Image (cartoon, rainbow, N blue to C red; front, side, top):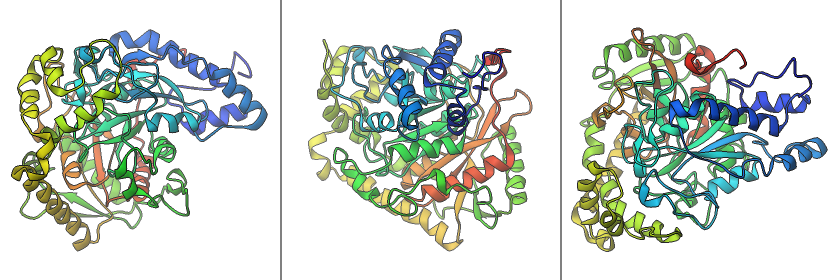
Length: 498
């Protein structure tokens, strides 16, 4: 740093802030990393955000700093501390999925998204806690313990990417990765006053990620700002031969070849935009969530948007997810394909072996056995499975018809109908509006919208867009974020030194 008396402010710093400080000679990758490691050491005992802090996190710092001084950044995330949900493979570190059964399960190499983050210059700080096997929403895993919400330690951050969300909210990292099947990026982002994106399935590789159901699964970037989410998406999006679904996203990036999501952001994107306020989600919300949403409506109008009340005809989005999702039907097939890639003593290689081990949450056993009873090799002849697949396509068409009929640029609704719940209580699926886009196969972005009046708990709103319309979606979210400024760090994890 240029002077110990005038260090750059790192709390709430964005990627752009950090790179400006580096370019001015006021900050190095080593100093930035050490600042975050110190905060992890000071605060994570109270938060439970991490399962592993990378043992080799300092190995690359000298190289990054020397390269920056000689030639400039190695990539758009040069020196940026990133955290990864612990269902993402990192070579040399167990991929636990929060389970005692995988405590010593080592992957053969980095997941594709991890390799791409490293190529962009990111520094992997560690792996974050999650609901076991990314199945749940109470922020607890037998291996990592309970994750606590930094805005109220007696509440949890939702799930299943709760550790990543908490690490970002409390300034223990700059950016992070979660995964999303039915809402696992967006619920904890909303509950921690951070930003989370569920990309269209096929935009980002799932190679090297513990699966739930590949029809619905996607990795999603998380950060404190929309711009930083876009920066991470720039680094990880693209075709990967190891994940056939990414062929769908080939050529779908914004602008010319290798176009940038971050460069497509505009503060005035809401001016003239048509936004559909999804009826039903508002009426079912908790009173304090409704109050925040009403103010968000006024804010979007002030920023130039036209809001139209709309609905998906003949469909309740929550019911659609419950009736059509393929999670329990694909879990055994997809997990059984992933587990044999792991190495270690007594690591299960199938869901049946996992059940036999008994090393998982007691309340998961019934569901796991239900999943194991599905004949994974005969899904193509399973009438119920095929009914659901057809139904998902029909539901997607009905939602897209709403966009077309009302000429909408995005839908908007509260990310969750209720505020963060006390530790030990799950968030009911009926309260998760995130399942709309998971069922319809659409991208969705949650951004901070404010806080409840009584207890000061974060509330997020979610924007949903058309398939592979992430550039437009991020632009709308960025415009709302910049025009409102609802991001606020948790008071309990600030200090005079920061």
